[in-house]
Length: 174
Picture 1 (spheres, rainbow, N blue to C red):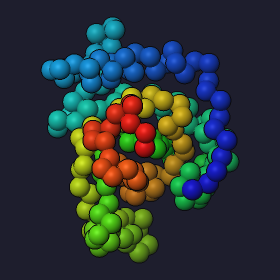
Picture 2: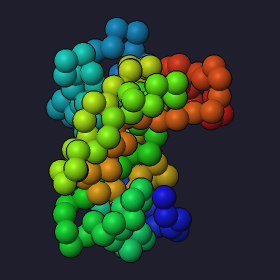
Picture 3: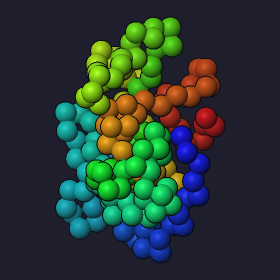
């Protein structure tokens, strides 16, 4: 993983994400977990197959991370800009959390030759609730190539704490 200096948070960032952030906070504070709505009443996030979907506000800031990372993926360091769209990746997963089984390396899967596709990977869901409060957190973003983000990283997130806090908590130090 490359080291880069995070770009400064744009002046409009907090205003741009405020309604989506509030909708998610309200959803997770709700005992009944009703579908979150923005202050205007428009559905800003939704439940799909029992999973929360976050309104994708972070993509508007891709160029800031591309510039800070010199157009390279934050994981594999391959050039993203100029060869693909790339993604603004959430380092701390915002939804589910998956964990690789260190006792069973065969469950990690492997990349199929000449395809950028991962085969035979098992991903036990260890929490259906991720770091949702970091979904709209500037410090949780980085530019990633689509292969690293959508084929390898996904919702995997290692934590050394044993036992780890599940579901994650804002107060837990990991």
